[in-house]
Length: 297
Image (cartoon, rainbow, N blue to C red):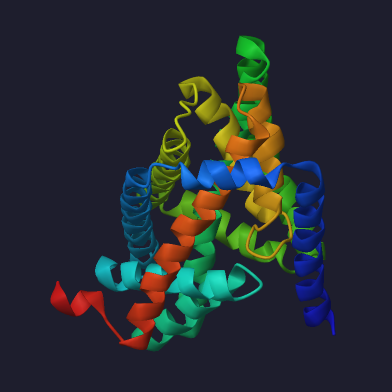
């Protein structure tokens, strides 16, 4: 019952926000924006997403190396693409992670290591995203805000392990965060590589969104890109049905402060969903035809 309640909650939040947008926005203008979209930028966005996904597979391979497991990045790349299919057609973004974990576990004959590597992959990306979001929010308040963000980051790093150690004793799930964090400390070289790859992944993710705004004839100021896109990316953490409704709402109100109309912001968000949907359909084909990209590499 708890599982179904979470699913209903996600669907309910998405539905409520979509109804809210339908009642507050002129969707005839959004339809016109979609029809006038320059679709060459969809191709560029897809290439950017593919590049980011390939770097993600190298990050995942680096994480597995810490457990002395060597897997082709092309095999992991294929799992990522297939994971997109499950993410888009299941009411939770954990669908793709479960698939990747099980498929990798079958490959290396070690389900626990596979599960931990998938968690670490997510964890490394989340750490970088949170840091970027911290500085993004700080930059909205000028140089003082950036220095305040730096101060918060330093204090947070100092308190992170002591607080996490205490919290992990009371909340079982946080033990995974503690173990993941220790891995970065025990293997500094690979830990640094994981964070570097995570930064590159986020840059390609930002470029994908930036490109979709270009398709609408809107050039986002570079400063606003690094200030707003980390915050927009964190909207995926809001419970919803694969970001539908939540992403559009966040885009509409967030980019308004950059001078972008809600119509264009919502259109860019819809195009973002379309790009991910195309990628997920490619993943579906890889699953249907049982294609293993590593066999050709």
